[in-house]
Image (cartoon, rainbow over all chains, first blue to last red; front, side, top):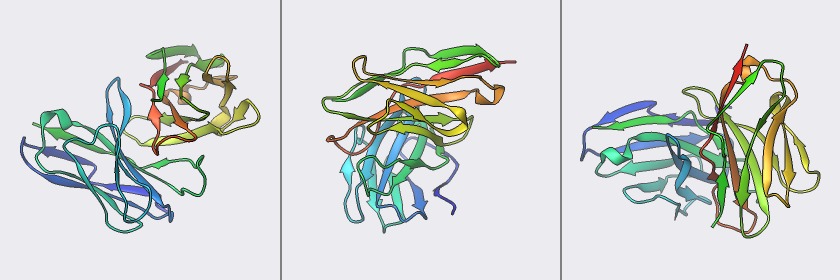
Length: 114
Length: 114
C-alpha cells in the first residue's frame, strides 16, 4: 500500500494564480482531511470530509475549496492564491470505524506564493 | 474549544539519557490524545495514542507517554535517547464528543547530542 499520496511535492505560484492540490489514499478510509503547517503554529485543519459526498470547514477554511471526488481522492483548490497561503499542506485520512481512529498523513506539498 | 500546549520549542538531551517532551491539553469533555513525529521534509508519522484505560501508553521506537487527567498532561518519554530520535514532535487532541479533526500543539524540536 502506498498509503496517502500527494501531488505535487513542490509548487511556486504568483499572487492571483489558481491551483489544485491532489490527495489520494489506498487504505479504503472513509474520512479525509487537509491541514496546513506554518512555522511555530503546528498544523491547522482547513477542511475535512467525513465520508464520500460530504465536506465541512475546519479552523482556517477561507481562501480554499475542496472536492471529495470519490472515496479515494480529496482535492484542495486555491482559486486566487495569496502570499499568506504560503505553507506546507498535508492530507490525512482515517478509517472512521471508531472515534479514536488514528489519522495517517501524506508527505506534504510545499507551496510558495510570490 | 480544544487546545494543546507544548511549552518547550526545543529540548536538548544527551544520547543515552532519558527524554521527556511535555504536552498539556484542554478539552470540554474526555480526550483522545496523540503523538506524532516529523522528520525533515517528511510527513507526520504516528507514534502512539491514549484512548482510555491504562495511563501509560507504549508506542513505536521505544516511546511511551503518560496520561495524567488531573494535570491534563500527556508527556512523551523515552528511557534512553538515540541520535536518530532528533526530530519535530507534535502532540494532538480530539474531544471524544467534539468535531472531527485534530488540534495540534506548535511542536517541539528534540535534539539528541552524541
